[in-house]
View 1 (cartoon, rainbow, N blue to C red):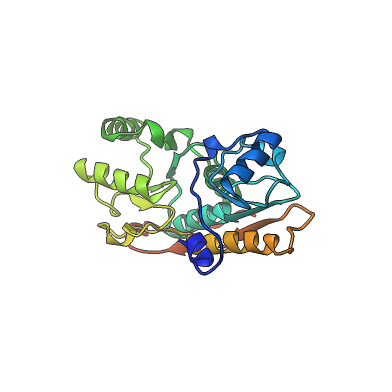
View 2 (view 1 turned 60 degrees about the vertical axis):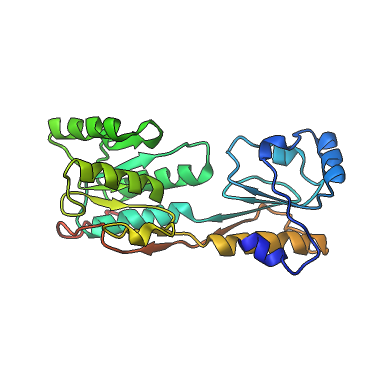
Length: 264
């Protein structure tokens, strides 16, 4: 929406292409762009090893969202997922939570990596011991698997008091599973999401989450392409623009004790 709103009144058309269709060879990419009348590219959520964008650098201006690559005609723009996740962890510490589980996602994406790194860093900065059993892969998760995971926590007499989810979709699933298991949210376990999808406020309880300025990121990406095509080139030095994220406090987190203070 942000990208299309910027280009709506300008003399460009938007072409949606699966990134797997883009030739990684420079010569082939030049022909591809010429054949399809492509003058600029905006990539969304490339994986960390998709370095073909560096190999084809200079053919057209490229803006890359939620990834980190360096090139003469490459501009990277991302939400600050590390700080957003860290803010969520600090909020849970302020609410007295020290036993926090984390639903890990594919670490091939920069945003997922940053969220997990912030989770671990927060534990370190607050002098707390991270229980590796609290980190679980949400790709392997369904209701049966989560019930088994929760039962294993119970058997160890070490149940997390909060779960930090890598996105709101996971939070929705976990809330559903926990309700089926008769676990009260947030009285027995608190839930924090990430992304602030449109439905997050309508959940029961309304979801505490991290809001990303996705529309503004899209607008800036389009603006950077437009500026480049009009002679305002990207900086020579690596330039990664980060947008601040916002902790949205709703009703899915319960205060359970005194605030936990950092040791640093």
